[in-house]
Amino acid sequence: MFFVFNKRKINSYLISIGTVIMLLAVSMFVNNKMNSTIETSAEAISSHPIYKVETEIKKVAISINCSENAENIESIIDSLSKMKAKATFYVTGEVVAKYPEKIKKIVNNGNEVGNLSYHYINLKNKKTDEVKEEIANCTAEIEKLTNVKPKTFRAPYGECSNAIAEEAKKQNLYTVQWNLDSLDYNGLNSEEMCERINEGLVPGSIILLHNTGKYTADSIENIINNIQKQEYEICTVSDLITLQK
Image (cartoon, rainbow, N blue to C red; front, side, top):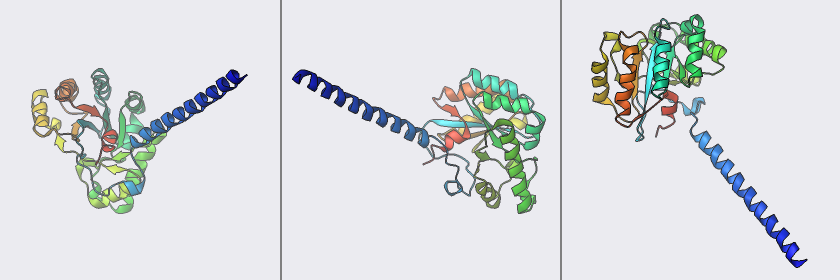
């Protein structure tokens, strides 16, 4: 009887210890998950544009502006998947409305959709109410189609001000620019774009590309390979922001 009693007691202790260990493991997982999620409350968002993320971790983001059409988007997505890289596609509300299947493919392949205003216009020339409407309408179009609310905003043409960034902040959006411009819209080829990127590539860099660049779609794999050879991981912009010091 003494043996049975102690055996039961030991089993009870083991079960209790196992339960505690399991709860601790779950707690650690949840905390890690929360820490890797971008903060999108207005209080956590800067009212100034982000050009690069301050981090020592060797991660960079590729951002692709899609302002007018869906040209080359599928080809770029396929190249990203092949190279095991992710990117953020900044799209206007008009592009989302016109090319819904292409936008869905961006999300379904693990990439991110960012807000590029509803119309591709210089927001610096617009009144506050118009800026508010342009940003909000693009967010609504993206969320309606993908069921995912964008986390970041980029001003068309890169024409941004603190007032525009402040309006984005009010809508729980980080305003994101870039520190590395590929100049693909000027017709640079793959080698020239890689050379430009290498000149300024550092942890936390945000690289600008365009879906309509003359050689962008054909060069994206070389661009990615060039970055990965330098032991950088390529991620989405919002993932990069989670590393901000």
